[in-house]
Structures are given as structure tokens and as C-alpha cells.
Length: 148
Image 1 (cartoon, rainbow, N blue to C red):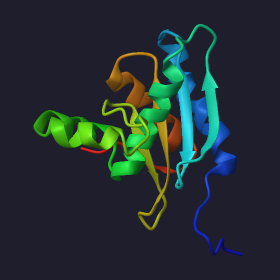
Image 2 (image 1 turned 90 degrees about the horizontal axis):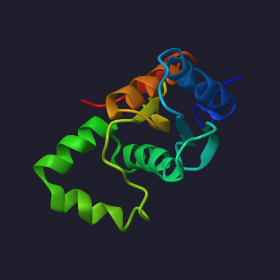
Image 3 (image 1 turned 90 degrees about the vertical axis):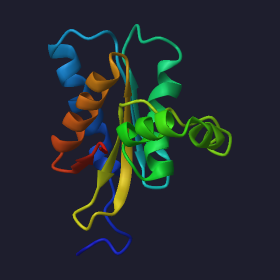
């Protein structure tokens, strides 16, 4: 029986976190933080490795929330911040401070292209954070949309 409310990521969320951390550990990155949000922006899974700095939780959530708020992966949001910083800065307050326009926020899309969630990763270089998020999503046979 299909789910009439669309694809849910709840049960896959914990696996996304574990799989997102795997390349970080194999590459000896610093302690990482991963946040998985559902399509409504609710936190459904989270992990902060021992030694992860205090702001990492808010940064990881902010990357994921930013992707959800704007409907694009964070590289697209980063490009927008460069080309129109006033616009992106104006979004931070309505987003409750949960908007970090730096790579590492990746949308999760269903087969019908609907956004069903987002992953935010923080702890290393932004492009490496993004690669970890993509790895976690695709390892669960879900579609990662990091943006352009």
C-alpha cells in the first residue's frame, strides 16, 4: 500500500546520519555534526560526534533549513548570497536564524521530485561537508539534490 501523504524519511534518517559520517571517519576529518530534517523542517535525526564544537549543531541545522526554506541545495544559496547578499541576509530573521548559506545543506527528493527533507553537515570544509551529506542520502537509495 502506498503512503497517501507522500514519501517519509523518518526511518531512513538514522541511517543517513550513520552513512554521512562514514566518509568523514575514513578521511580522518575533524568531529562532524549531521542533522536530518523532514519536509516540514522537523528534526528527525541528529548526531554530533564527540569533540564537535558547540556551534556545529546550529550550523548543520541551518544548512539543512536553508536548503528547505529556499528549495535549493546550499551551493545555490551560496551563489545567491554572493550575487545578492542583501536578499539572503533578509531571509535570516524570518528563518529564525536557521539559514546558513554555505555548502553542506542538501535536499532529499522523492522519485516524483518532491522535497521530502534535507540534510545539513558541519565540521570540515564546506565541500567535504556536502559530499558527506550526499553520501548519506544516496546510501539510503534516496535522491540527493545539492543544488548547482
